[in-house]
Amino acid sequence: MSKFGTVGVSGQSMQPTFGDGDWLCVRWLNGQTSALERGAIVVIEREERPGIFLVKRIQKFHSGRYWVEGDSTESTDSRQWGWISPHEIRGKVLFRYWRSKK
Image 1 (cartoon, one colour):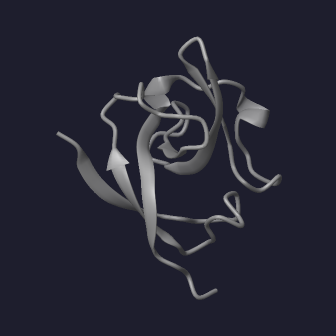
Image 2: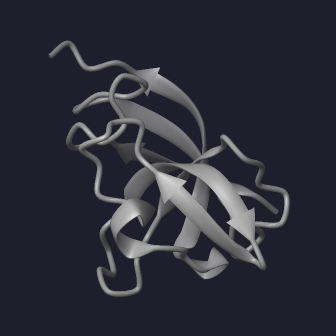
Image 3: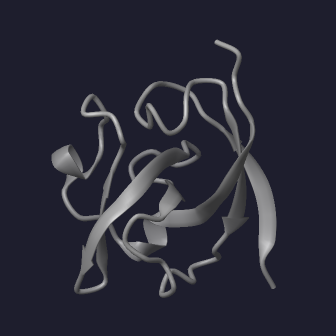
């Protein structure tokens, strides 16, 4: 059974798609990443930063691993980390339900 939640965007890594202060509706995946496609926007939690959720876009996947990037070239993402494991992907962004007025 899927569970849904919300995530607030902090920072500029997903500009222009999402901005600082936007709120997103998320479907938590509970380890079920097999249906994710290239271009999907996901919530990740890096092993070395537990409790910190990051919003990134899947750019490619290979051998069960994912390459994720923010939409901004200033984003910290797979361009620095390399490939991430599927268990680091926590949810899939469904839509923005609140746009920041900033």
